[in-house]
Length: 226
Image (cartoon, rainbow, N blue to C red; front, side, top):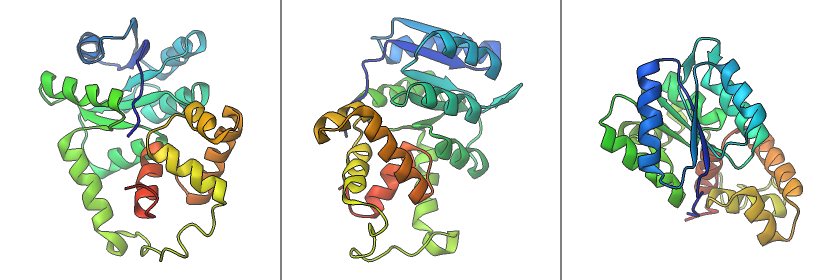
């Protein structure tokens, strides 16, 4: 999987002061290339920061006083499509995990875990790996292993699986699933970043997904990536 970063600017969005300070302190330990880490206590404050700076990384609590992490993630990715958003929360249930991934989160870590464990998980994003607490990774695997019993469609046959995507969309999906950023995929395909971004929007709409994590899982399910 392709590497992200190096990260220069990061934003922490957390309403609890102690947790906010904890995240601000551990981020540079996990990602030494960071030049600045800003901190917001609400969706509104986060939007003020995002209006004046382009963040490559955001660590976002899901429950905020004036909204949810979904609001922050969608605004972040709309402003900077290649930005990485990680949800940091205490909740490890399906009602929080899957909405976060669908919103576009590239990772989900539990603040209740030891500091060194969270640091290790965040370090993975620079190598293109999703930052997932072990219990969250297992929950995602169980969800997909459940198959039709969990409301999932039966896996299509190879001849059917990409019938509703154009060949170019398949190429874009494969690169995005491998961890390439939109600008990098554009360079590899000889396209403009705006054109690739348009393809990504069409792919998400056709597949009924809304995050890179879901795109990677869809591509793997369809045999597009190993």
